[in-house]
Image 1 (tube, rainbow, N blue to C red):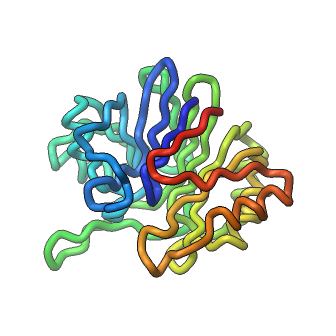
Image 2 (cartoon, rainbow, N blue to C red):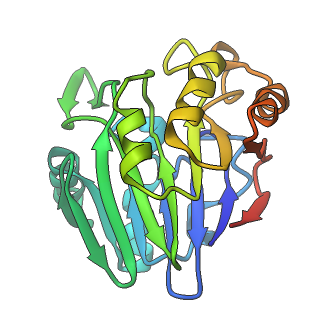
Length: 227
């Protein structure tokens, strides 16, 4: 499994079998370093409907003739906009073209603004992605919650991707505890330094992980690791 970071919470995950992108906030993010038309994938995975996560999902889906996986209400929204979709919900799993996706709970919110109207897009979620024999847990936007321990106990997670920005999600202290509970030996920090309000030191967070026996990867946009 090869994982490439494209800023904020966007991860491109590839194996010899397939490729997916999670939360592709690219064209609206000056730090992504890539355009939506450059993305070649077999599926798009969304954790929730906020614009910095939905991002370019619909365009990427249409360009690649591939489905968007999302919680039911968000999937319906994407389908209305002309995208292929896989309707998911919390606790459910689905295998498609060598990709297995399971949705977990997350503690956050999920909506889309169109003009003066806010559209409800279902529950926010985390994603367990199994591809090429490895499992990535992308926590999405979430606060710390106790069932992260259960997710770690019930799943053999090879690498976790956790928000550390604080203010809108959990911060570094809570993310450190989440990493312990998830039992993954590797962690990628997400959702930080995109905007001033979520400025954090990813390298410092990864130093703290190492003190716990966990390997941290403070990736810059465009950088990759292999698991």
